[in-house]
Length: 340
Ligand code: UD1
Picture 1 (tube, rainbow, N blue to C red):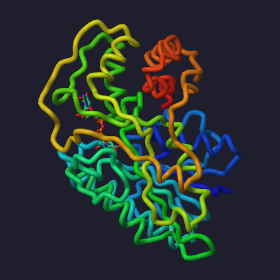
Picture 2: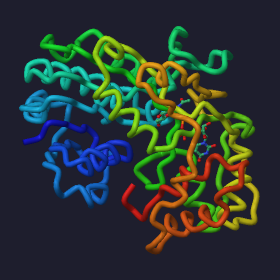
Picture 3: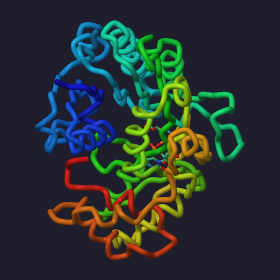
């Protein structure tokens, strides 16, 4: 019997959370509509009860929530540029989907929903690092949608029973993901540079990101599900590394890692793009009782077997592991062929 539901389970974050739960021996149900998720991401999750379904359909939400106690809501139509091109699609798959899920979760007596927020809600305010008490200032339809989902989660707590009623909000930052379904810049750069193709930097490359290691995101989610309601209910917490790196610096690191010998192409900055992204991560440390930073070099010890770009990159990461200046390595070393 599934105790946990993971939405967006065929995506990078969702499948990583499901894998961690299964490794703990938990009963897990996963739902995905494969709009952007990939079936290959379900490999290794055979012990999970999988349900193909679209959260914009209330009946699918009801089926997904039946009997579960805790929901990790990771499903979304990610991507700032996609939301600029198709704001309605983003709204349906982020806002409508979240609301349907919350209504179904309440009806099913779900005790807690852990919601995956986005750093994009902070917008382009010059204040760094971004902290949870700042007023949101979404400047892309994606950020608006993620913010709406956040507010709905807070306004519609899952249930009123026991220590429940807790909706917990997390703010995810720019996550790396190596497969084509994730639009993150690290994934794109890695794939291109390993193939000897020139990557494109939108803008001057001096924009910065708080790239967040997937293990930390998974860890934070599990802690958030288990934390006392009085600490975390309705509470947004930044989930990040607390460090930032510019795209130009990232390119240089990847150039060395991949052996790419060319230069990047520069193109006009993207609409809705944020200049700098850096999180204050003290609150999550306080409320979840752990520090989410610093990045450990553990990721570099990830399985390095296999072939293809991801394994090749993992091996490159492992060769240079231990050089202090490269906090971004573990993200990359965590890539594993086609699975994430
Ligand atoms: C945003 C959100 C993040 C969310 C993600 C979902 C912010 C700060 N972060 O990430 O919380 O999870 O959307 O999609 O808003 N870039 C290039 N070349 C490329 C691709 C990207 O230069 O080929 C640039 C982008 O213009 C941007 C940076 O790299 O400046 C990062 O882009 P991306 O990885 O897509 O994530 P964000 O849009 O920053």
